[in-house]
Length: 281
Image (tube, rainbow, N blue to C red; front, top):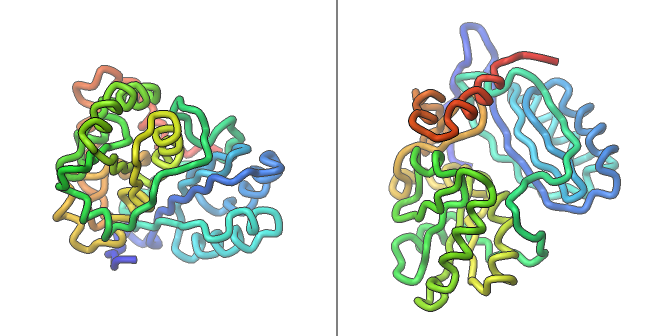
């Protein structure tokens, strides 16, 4: 992990950190797993989604509290064997990212509107990803919302104009034949890797595309590449109170109002973002 400069959230406050994690794995008892995750995360704030297909979480707390959570989660009798080797992407916080803890049992940990197919694209490391940027035989495809793309993106990336999760499959279907005809591979990225992992199997098996996925997404790239600024334009949006990070994983001065300005659904998104501030049980 690249070195990070911790930021103090307030006068006399302990240093806060944010972690993001997910794993697609069949859970034999999703309800029991959700209950156990709620117990393990009781000293933290954030959101964890649990479904039969796996776990997806973002949490915040002190370094010691997060260390304890990660250790106990991977050592848990129920969850440990299922989540063994799961990566935790950590960054420092100036603003507390969340106001409460939510652990939800869901039908899916991410919804992208495509069939859930087991085959996935070829996962490439951050160093390998850098070598793909700028190649004539590669389409660099952003698998995020369009407002996230406008805030920041990899150089020469394509914006699929996503305002709803069904927009991404429609865009890919509309361009797949052209990409294949021109001998293009698709190098795809998202914030943490989960959307790419969910869609790459469909893109390969149903559309016949050759898909390359950035390992761990943007956040892992920023961690692994101290000079990530060479390849990234702008900032990276995050779905918490910090709003946006630079390539050193440090919070920027960008506000939610600036992110959602002039967006067709900006008022709704801004209202949802403000609900993160509410410290409710």
